[in-house]
Each structure stands twice: as structure tokens, then as C-alpha cells.
Image 1 (cartoon, protein in one colour):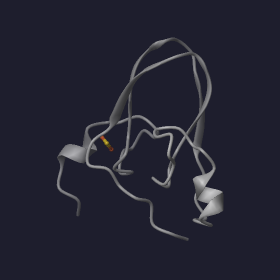
Image 2: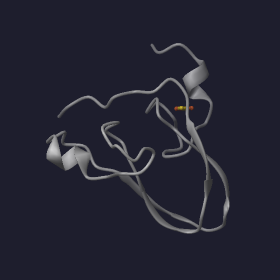
Image 3: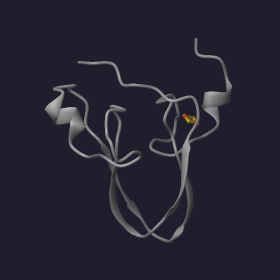
Image 4: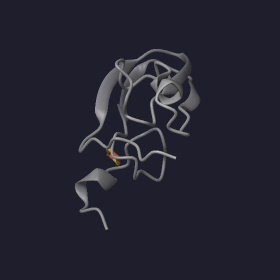
Length: 81
Ligand code: FES
């Protein structure tokens, strides 16, 4: 399995309701959404698929250390151990 490409802060978007697939490999050209890059690059990773109930501002984790994927929980502010 390939290590994901990590960002140092979340991507903040105005999200709409529906089922969403958020990139977990960091290779998507449509971040924060999956574009199938995890398969094309044979990463062994898969997107985080979840239902968004209501429109609103969302912070999508890019450091991949959050305890509440795909949502940022502020962990990116702490040094990686
Ligand atoms: S980007 Fe904020 S916890 Fe990962």
C-alpha cells in the first residue's frame, strides 16, 4: 500500500447534501473529492464515502490524522509524532 500524500491543513468548502467520496490518497485532481486516482496509481487506498445531510461549510482533513474522517478535527495543528 502506498502512503497518502498529506496536506498541512484542511480544504474548506461549501458542501451540498448528498453522498460524497472524499480522496484519501491525495492524488486526485479534484481534491477534496475522489477522481479514481487511487485506482490508477494502485495505492491500495480507497476514498472516504459519506452522506452529507445538509448544506454547509465543511473542513475536509488532508493531513490524514483526524479522529473523525473525513472531517478535520484540528489535529493538523499538532506536530506529527
Ligand atoms: S487537516 Fe485538520 S485534522 Fe487533518
